[in-house]
Length: 205
Ligand SMILES: [Zn+2]
Image 1 (tube, rainbow, N blue to C red):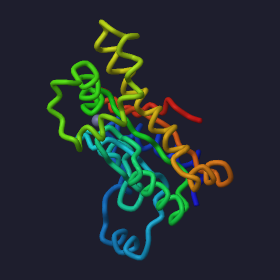
Image 2 (image 1 turned 60 degrees about the vertical axis):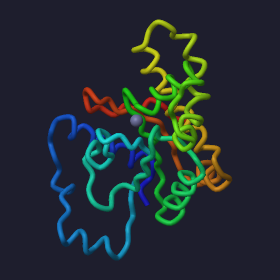
Image 3 (image 1 turned 30 degrees about the vertical axis):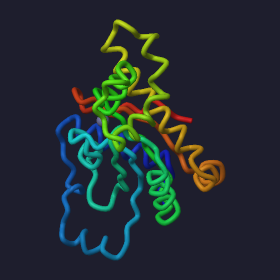
């Protein structure tokens, strides 16, 4: 079992390599490694990230086969299936770090801001609304506060959404609360910059 802070350091080192355009050899999926992993996995971190095609967790953290347990959903929201996935990995593989990975210019956050501004003429389906509805409480208060500054609004809204997801997950189930309190499970929030490639871990309990 890899302790949470050690796992976090490993992710940061990987992201530094990614930003510097250095690829580690470990990230290459050799047939030997594949065979080893067929017998069992021990991912050192759980990443709950956005589905955005520009933010693939394994690439931005320069990790390979078997390293990360990744859950991706538009807007990195925390719904019951995401909580269940985290519980599963934390219990089965004793993974002790969870990173909520949001990113700059998140389309799901933009859609939520639009929905809040024009609720009546929204073209969103019921399914998409279920995502937007989960992001809404985190960004609602920012609309008035940052009115007139679209750039700041989107920036702060993306971060607020990450913070909200991290808090929801921390209190998402008794199992997770117990793992956090007694077993060293750490849930942090981070933002990936589409422009620089840097992952900023800005939210810790
Ligand atoms: Zn996104």
